[in-house]
Structures are given as C-alpha cells and as structure tokens.
Image (cartoon, rainbow, N blue to C red; front, side, top):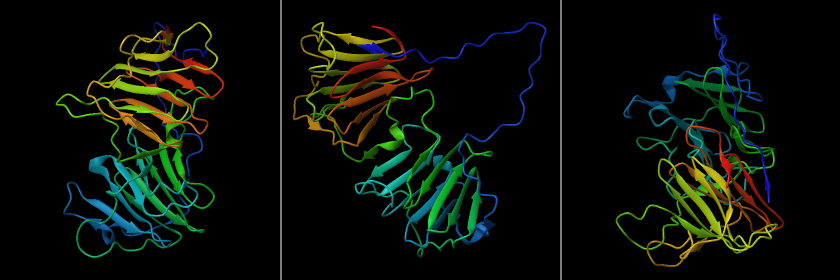
Length: 311
C-alpha cells in the first residue's frame, strides 16, 4: 500500500512581530462577473421567505435561486455538460451539500405565485453574498462571497463546482465531480439507524460511521495489498490504513436488510463523511474533523490512503 503524505500547514509564531491581514483575494480560477449589466433585484425577489430569496429562469429553461438563509444558490433542470442523471447543481460553502444532484425534490423552483422572471443574457443579479449571471451560449455562472470563494458554472462546455475541495491530494477524486441523490443507503429500520452501508461494483462493502467524528471503512479484496488485510479504513480524527476485518466486519449493517450498490459516478454524504463510487468499480472515501481531509482510494489496481496517521 502506498500512503500519501499528510497535508497540513504548520504555523510559526514570530515574537515581537505583528501580522496584518491584507484584503481577501478571490480563489484561483474564480469567474469575473464585473462586465455583466446589473438587473434590478426587486424583479426577482420573493419576500415571503425568511430574509428574502431570489428566483429566476435562464433562457435555456433552468430554474434557479439564491437562498441566503439556507447558505446556498443553484439551479434545477436539464444540465448541459453534466452526466444525464444530474438535474440539480448546488453552490454552498458546505462541501457536503454542494455539487451535482439527482433529485425528485428540486429546491430552487419558485414556490409561490407565477413563474420566475427570465434573467436575460448579459445580465446579473446580486443578492446577499451571491451573484448570478447569464452569458452567451447560454452559460449560467454563480459566485459566493466577495471576492468569490466558490462558484458554479452551467454550460455545454462544462458544468460543475469550483474550486477543487481544499486539502485533497492531486490524485484523489473530488466530491464536487460526483452526483449526490435522494436515495437512502440505510439498511433496515431502527431508531438509531443513521450510518449508511453500501457496496460498489468492484466487490467492496463500505460503511460511513461518522457523527462528529468516527470511522469509514470498506471490506473486501484490496488490490495491491498482499499481507492478508481485507479492510481499509480512516478513523477521524486518527489513523488511516488497512487491517484484517473483525467479526462481524465493520461494514456489517446494524439492522438486517439488503445492501444497495452505489452507482458509478455517484456519492454519499453522511455526517461529515463522503464516499464516491469510481468508474472502475472502486471507491474513494474521505472526511475531515478540524483538519485537512483524510481517507482512502481503492481502484481496480491499487489501494492508497492519505492524510491522518499511519494505521
């Protein structure tokens, strides 16, 4: 097994010195919406919601909104440049709620009154800490923060969320690129049944046992591991590594029932942990509690861990 280096920054205090922070800078790659013509926000404002919400349509039929009280903006509808299963994109400062989604309960459709007004090409709306614009193509772009710290883009040339999830090694898949859904992966029924258990097509069975910390692990044959270990894990906070599965293994459901397979290209987010089903049948899982992400990636050829402490 190859273990990636722990990604952490060390802060060094310099006595008798004073550091003054300069103006915040936009995240690298952030869109610049300064050239778009402002549209009067009042035309799109719904004051019935807590703190007000903005709803608009795009020329190509997306239904979009800015919902500051929820900390998110996004669009529902057919998403060009995205996998066909995705019908919603969410911009949020929370990495576990942002990204592409496949949902039957859209959250950016105007809930009352008539249809939302169309935001014409070349125009933008600014509301709270969100700004959304429609460009040629058409292309819909929204940013969060001033200067922008996160953004979403919807266009035929590519649909997705930026920037890349902070702290991930370059060879670890980004949850932003995977599809979340309404599907539940809880097995059985019980009052404390909160931990999803799932399989992936390559044969592993996994459990996200996170609740303000905890453990994520996958059981099964681990490519590239030749010492007999059959479980890869990350304990958050704590070590990452491989081990021999206990009896019952970590992935055994606490409540009996069938274990569902997570489709390739999809992800599960649960209480601060995320697992992604890879196209080759493998899985990537990560979590972070008060520090950089740590976790593991199991492909058809290799098993790797990153962050945390050696298991």
